[in-house]
Image 1 (cartoon, rainbow, N blue to C red):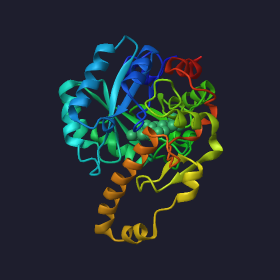
Image 2 (cartoon, rainbow, N blue to C red):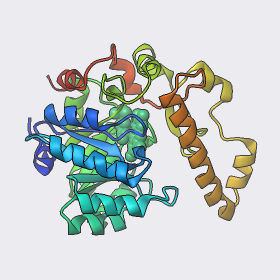
Image 3 (tube, rainbow, N blue to C red):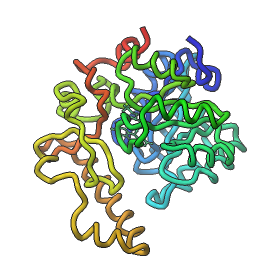
Image 4 (cartoon, rainbow, N blue to C red):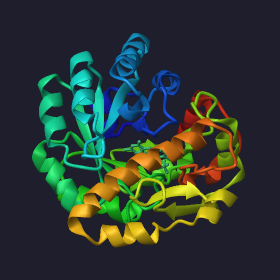
Amino acid sequence: MSAQLSQLLNIKYPIIQAPMFLVSNTAMVIEAMKGGIAGCIPALNYRTLPELKAAIHELKAAKVAGGSFGFNLIVNKSNIKYKEQLRVLCEEGCDFIITSLGSPEETIIQSHKVGIKVFCDVTDLKFAQKVEALGADAIIAVNNEAGGHRGDISPKTLIELLKKHCSIPVISAGGVGTKEDFDAMLGYGADGVSIGSPFIASTEAGVTDDYKHACVDYGAKDIVMTQRISGTPCTVINTPYVQKIGTKESWLESVLNKNKTLKKWVKMVRFSIGMKATEKAAKEATYKTVWVAGPSIEHTKEILPVKKVIQNLTT
Ligand SMILES: Cc1cc2nc3c(=O)[nH]c(=O)nc-3n(C[C@H](O)[C@H](O)[C@H](O)COP(=O)(O)O)c2cc1C
């Protein structure tokens, strides 16, 4: 099996274990590398820069041939740590950075100086062409089946559209829960895939057993979009708590959002409140569960080690 992503990152299978806020950790990425794929962690999973540095050192020490590791940076204003995180990644080194939610220009400039590849989350052609012009090494094509902040376009349409109009590799993100799904994405022309949700119920994931069991017990039909976490629509498991609080932004937020100046601030405040709510649900077993996941949990039938999840996706 050889798709462009394998050559780009020197990995056995063209798969990235996708960055997941509060879920991804070094244990998962180390197993990903051993399994012949790449692994990625959101830099925001580390509260402090020394913690981020320690994670990079751990991954460098554990790196094996056929595997590769990277970090995800939220590059818009909501991430006040962005510049410092970028500096640490460039100083300490990693194989690649995935940018999301903003312009990747600064990240591309700084990363390329030290040989780090930059892949950019996009959901449409316009933004894909923008990041290609800025010098991105690949596009992460986030489709309408992805977990988290998903796009609006189906996997097939998005891959075909981007392959037709862009010349850098296209990595498809969203909706891969089985080897058949993986093969289908490559069949549509993808140069690799980025897979998140199927790794939530892994032994190594840094979340509660309740969250992992929810990924086993619930399926594609239980995934809903909510604006209540970060303001940006996000996919979550439709637990009784989510049903109780609803999925729409509040009346006050919607009024404030109509004002251009206030909108920016509402977004920042909502983002920070949302991060805390998600963190609480991910780390504590309370009835207030806001668990982010995508429809590909449909195929999650038990809690398995990362190694086995990779085997199920590739053989
Ligand atoms: C629990 C969860 C958290 C996520 N957190 C992030 C994140 O912090 N940054 C990011 O760029 N994408 C994030 N994503 C999106 C993933 O990186 C990836 O695009 C998505 O999981 C692909 O869809 P899939 O879940 O169907 O595999 C998250 C997805 C999930 C399910």
